[in-house]
Image 1 (tube, rainbow, N blue to C red):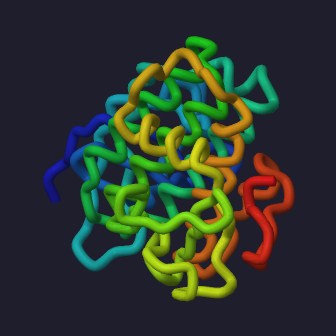
Image 2 (tube, one colour; image 1 turned 180 degrees about the vertical axis):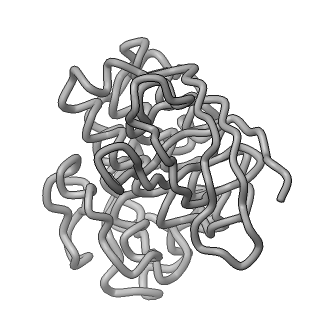
Length: 251
């Protein structure tokens, strides 16, 4: 089998033995794949001293058709993103982003736009950008690339007692208040922040932090609904998000 070279990020890893690792890798052109890195923890191995979670590297690997596990031949580290190992909030946000990649994308299906969004997210955290802002931008990019982006055009939605109504099962903002009696109540400022973030405007600053936090929680609740499961890392970053929609998931 021919070897493949790609720009990759490690999104999961397990110790296979004292000297080897099994890794989940997200390649820009390859997509998600699992591989064994034999001898990766040996000092003189071609793996930059081991493969850390959410490190980025120029990877060489071999993927066999029909096999669940490929072979990682080399891992030339290009970015380690030290802030995600020094700041607890950035750490939890980064783990959540890695979790979403594994849940939203299928193995072997390239998603270069999501890869680029993950790189921008990790680089933003390393620069000291607002973590909540960066999480929101990444969630929106991942949803869009996975075909799960909700309907968020205020011009097509109704307002009920000064708020919008949002239903994941109905695809986003409701056009009539009776469409889903369990819909979440969402303030206009929350929708405005989401639409601004979707355009990647003002990535380094934030004008309404409260609305950004609410927007993040709304998109996380939407993700949980469309995935039919809660990502393991969601609660660590967001805390508890209501599973019922009588109140605001962004309170």
